[in-house]
Amino acid sequence: MLIRLGETEFPLPEAPQVLEIGFGDGRFTAQVARLYPDWRILGVEISAGSVARALKRFRREGITNVRVYHGAAGFALRNLVAPKSLHQVYVNFPDPWPKSKHQENRLLQRNFFRRLSTRLATGGALLLTTDHEEYWKFAQAEGLASGLFEVETPPPPEHHLTTKYALKWKEQGRWFYHAVFRKVSEDPTPWPPLARYPMPHALLSGTLPELKSFEKTVVRFEGGTAVLLEATRTLGPEGGYYFHTHLEEEDLIQDLLLEARPSTHGLYVGVSRFGAPLSTVGVKAAVEWLVGWLEGQGLQVLQRSY
Ligand SMILES: C[S@@+](CC[C@H](N)C(=O)[O-])C[C@H]1O[C@@H](n2cnc3c(N)ncnc32)[C@H](O)[C@@H]1O
Image: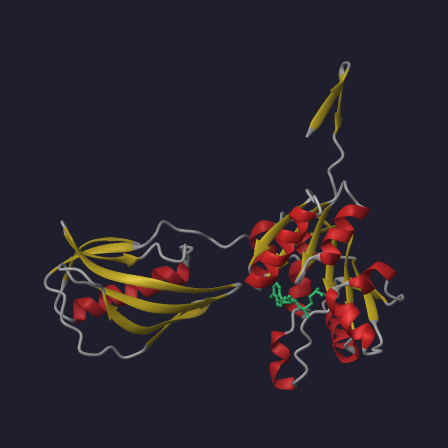
């Protein structure tokens, strides 16, 4: 953006963009928002209860420079954050997943650091505070192994020790660990936002068979799996089926309802609007499978859109 002063145009300094992952009840977010009123803060939190509590707090405290996304950090970073835009990222007391068989669930892994490097501005940093020494060391090793970050471990700033979890662990006399991961280089692999498509659907002719049972089916596609868990009959005279589908793709998990229902032009097969699904490669693969399956039951495709 440019501002004009007399004959000359100057670039308007951009407000620093900051991300907090897993803000919990939002008390740290609110504190940072007050300390740095010119920052634009995006908070990402996967728990709906926490999002509701934090939003209440922001309203009550008159915080206006925080925006909230309810969902997973990987998805938000990929789809909501512009390349090279983040000044700082906060991760306070991330779930430590202490058992070795659960370590793959940890947020701060090599792959995450690679991707983060594409969204951080030059010199931008992630600040980790945790009570979990092993995770702290793990995160440092992963950050360094990415080859894209340098790591320093100063003591945690005092205001990082006032989050809900910090206060809880303080009471128990736990020790705190801090690390600053500063971007020194950027992963060359582009990590564009998820590709989106028009909602896939098809029109079939023939009679929808009465389903006595439906066998759970796993559909594999490049980058993920769709599991059609069960079929349930819709109420109403025309009759139709919903197919409960669990979809796991890179950076996105969705539970959606595929549907097969009679319409004026034939049997409509597609995706119900329920749950506001995102149309992705995986949704297309699931609809494609369902259409093929119905063809196997003797129906004919009149038209397909995918
Ligand atoms: C141990 S709590 C810490 C909360 C807060 N930062 C604090 O210090 O009080 C971890 C938080 O991270 C959230 N979380 C876990 N995985 C997440 C993910 N992939 N994306 C966003 N939030 C996540 C959890 O819902 C939880 O609120």
